[in-house]
Length: 277
Image (cartoon, rainbow, N blue to C red; front, top):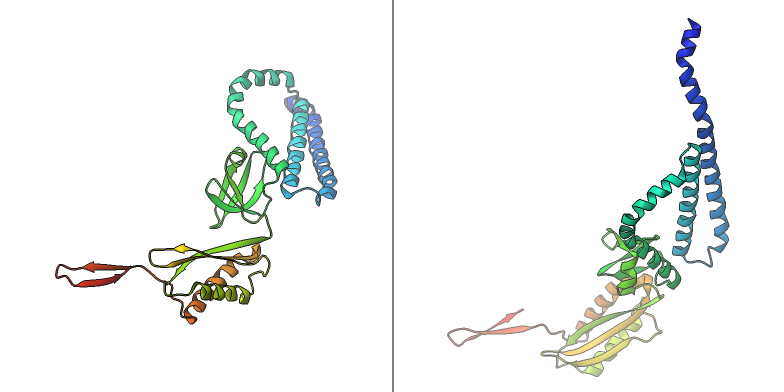
């Protein structure tokens, strides 16, 4: 009875024994891969100050992908898969896949150029292909942008290379421009003195560079001015709100009118009615 039972379980035992070696070897390969990945990442840390955040991100992902590929190949070999046959099959399919991989290869090459050129870094606010947002991550094939209304946008690296790209926060200092007009009854010299005072009294406006104050021309119902003030990039929202409020209040206190359009409608009786737009 016992001998018959053992004979029934003999194939199962042999199967377990035959697979125990590859399974153990595979687990060892995974463990070694994890250790190698941690060691390589630790070796990159001393270069963190010399490399840009996106370069570090790409290097770390390249380490992870490379070690993972080696571990997978090792596991396949342990279970008896013949890589030559797989590579042969891949070569036949590669002709068809190659056309589809052209875009990925182009994105990868574009990513290398972006890392070398460094037009932006993680955390910068950029505008590309009509989309404005904060750079969250840079990968080998694409870049992830978080828009100001908290949407996540994936942009291929090839698009970044081909499109016009504006880096808003690359430099520590920015200029905020205001275009406005005042009544023709206003004295331009008086207006410019008021603008200089508003800039000097605003705590977010920098003394250097000097504010841009330009009398730009004559509009249909106004004298046109361009007013540009410099500020730290991190103070943009607070400065914008403060300078616009200060400008409106100060112009009103100084008796300087900001005109708005008027429309005169002549009724059939010949009596004009003035309508404000």
